[in-house]
Length: 197
Image 1 (cartoon, rainbow, N blue to C red):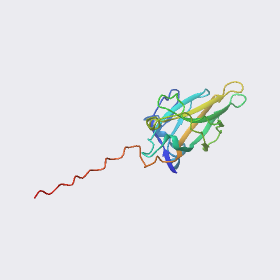
Image 2: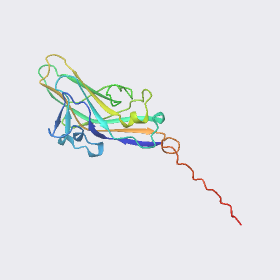
Image 3: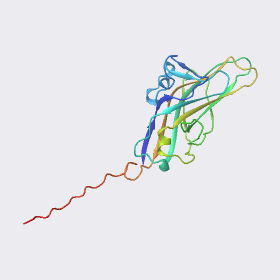
Image 4: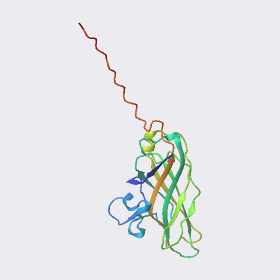
């Protein structure tokens, strides 16, 4: 057994989302769990409408076996800002892993959870299962997909927006036999010379 911790290291499609601070990349605003900094750096969903964002992740280890995945845990720290008009709108969030094309799923889609209206962040540990057959290069290009679902109740709220401050992925896997997918080096051959008298 081995553990691989993947963190965000690039932006995928971010249409409709915003970030705080507003300059620079989106992924740099989402810390790993240990480095979570609350409202200092965040990405924000579209306001009062559904929205999906994708992030590139760090590469898997060299001994990673796509067929040897035991469990996947996706940790997300999130909260929601809300300014109601009539009945308070609801909202949920879920996450999954996809290929670099941002459409081919590599994990199941966990049951969405409510993102709370709060000044502090809630951490949800999602536990999707592997889905489909994917190569090592597919896993090296894996992306995190975050889905925000706005649920209106009456007149749309003035504000109904999710904030994400931290995320990371932990994969428990059985390493490939030999510790690497690299082929073994050839064994040197020694030729015994014959002594000429």
